[in-house]
Image 1 (spheres, rainbow, N blue to C red):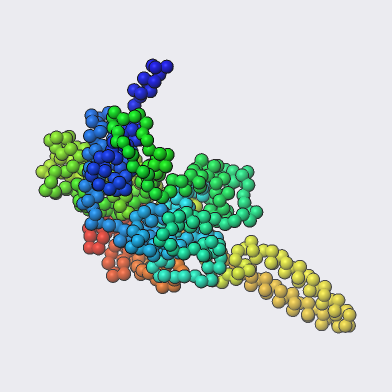
Image 2: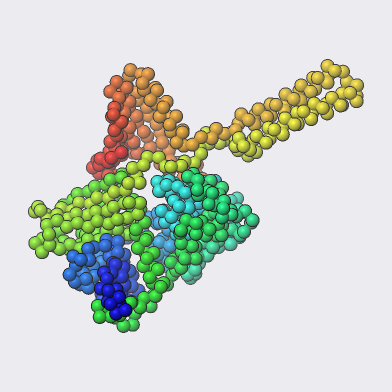
Length: 593
């Protein structure tokens, strides 16, 4: 028995276990730096995330205690230097990954309207649930805390589809918040709890109440477990009506969580709990007990914060050296590369890469040459097989930093599933919004025509009308009924998928280009609207040149000020090159397409 225990003690620990083993010791060091218990705990949790996300080689670290203390000290210095940079002032509330992240990042005492905006986003998602899938996906991500990879399992869709739906929903909500629109008629559709809720700065359970208000009471329409299994055995994305019911039914959603091996709603609420853990009373270290005294709640919060960083999808990358921001790059392609010269008066000690939300995705501890090697690298693995790599070289007069961010999901051009597009929605009456809705009505009209002919025949015989008069009345009634049926049939919408609509457009463009011996030029005006406002929020223009002889196509995108912001060149072999301008008056950047 003693031999087994000795082998277990000598077995190598994971990064998480090594950090938890020194939790009390590291907390005391953070408390010496910050002098505040809450700030010290937050700094310690940040250090845990960076240590477990970056996962340095433990075998190459001689003094792990010293390495972790240096990591926490550098993180603290980075906080002090970046205190003047506050991304929250330039971001909308919907830009954050979730409502919980938005509440943690905002100062509610100074911004009480944050809760009011959260309620408006919540009401939007509930009202729009029956008409578009993106509202259901937004509810899962923003309010219930589902990660993109988990949403893909819930809706039975690809990662690219989830991103597109979330992006479209955020754009629509951003326009809603900007235009200060309130749909008074739609408020009657809200549940009583959600309709009565108001902002309360002193309510620490505000977000929990919002989540509960989104669930509807049982109405007998729940989906059985065999039916759910049959839906997920199919490779198709869940139907919009089914998804709208599932997202707002607590029983069905928990059934899916169990079926798809996802955490239950109660576990998610426990992970998102508020409040802070009490600091340890006695600091430990290498000589401390093998098991740390942190509670299960702190352990869950550490895991949730690490998963939050792991699943985060950045739109911009901010590169910082020694806590000083040097540059920023937008993420617009599957492969994003950046190289810059580090021209600082001080010695390089650490490199950080943040997202636009201030989430640190990479931290690299640097030992400047000649104390360290001439080339140092740090690579981070993220969700959906994404990678972020930083390489620092001391081969020249000044250090050179290379940053590479790869996202293979962006290599896909079309989502796995697209929602139907209505070509003529304005002409469709409420009683015939689809062919399936109009078919029963047309069948009923056939019986009405037959019945009307019999009735007119009986009346004609009863009153003694002639055969000729009776035939005229019957013909007129039949013609009127048929005209009504034909009108209903003709105004039905032509429902096609967005992918099919794009394919038709491409085929038409290729056919017109092949039949012409001249250079074709087209100009398209592009306006962007924020639902439900009818006022456009942006005006852009697309210029297209096509040479059938050279088999070359060039597309250029102009902004409101008639400046070129992007260009695409498609060669004869089908290869495409995309050029984008980095910011206003910036340089052109080439990306793969």
